[in-house]
View 1 (cartoon, rainbow, N blue to C red):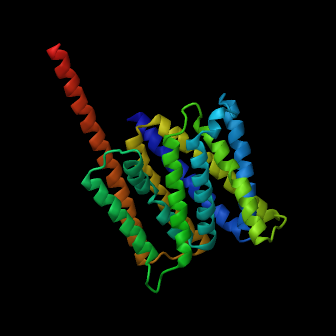
View 2 (view 1 turned 45 degrees about the vertical axis):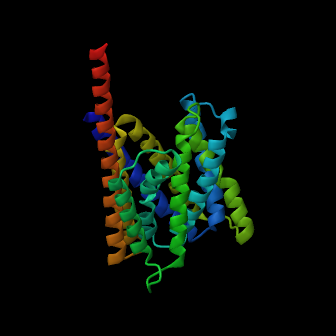
View 3 (view 1 turned 30 degrees about the vertical axis):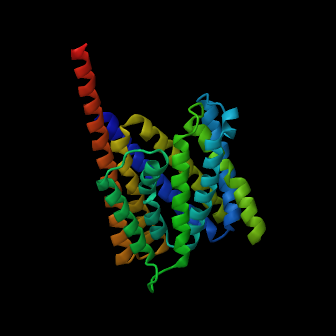
Length: 304
């Protein structure tokens, strides 16, 4: 229980860090082009993770970084980072963060389709309910529909694809090493976007502060996330990911004067509820499978 409690608190701290990171990135996007933000943020994050990785003895250079799962992961990393950064820059922070909460649902669906993991009808129903929650936030075809909200959907798909590719990544690569290359991919991505949009500027004091703070909170959040997943049980710690939405809603209201409407709040509640149910149902299924395997082992032992 102590480990799970510590893991839950670390996960909450990680989600708070990511929410504050998003807030500072959104602030910086009002002063600096998004492509330039990706370059600076990616380069600074890469250096921070390289220092952390070396301090823990992790290898930064390995032939495995060119393996197919890592290359696929890099593509999805670029997709997730690019479109989600554009989403928080161009749309309300609260709605972008709410849509992002569907990532675990997409990961479960993808694991069933790609890795043939067993997902029962109850979890499929919860996944579909979560997607309905996303549609409620998007409101396609209605007066409140904002086409730019699709950016958050594309970012969610990118992050889900990255997480699925991470499952197939070589075990020789540590989480910190993956973090190094994940942030490194943002540099050429930002450069390409900046070449297309133009408008590069020399960051002034407020912009530099926002970018530095975003990097600091982003690295701290990632480190806390890694620690949380290693300390507590994954099935008990993971649901605390949804605390990120609460922090994002609070920051959106206080810092950016956002006023989430009833549809956004309803869709957010459906997504979070569906995600928590999916995680808890998956935990129960794993426990049942372990119990069944234990009974089979005991029966084999008695027979022998």
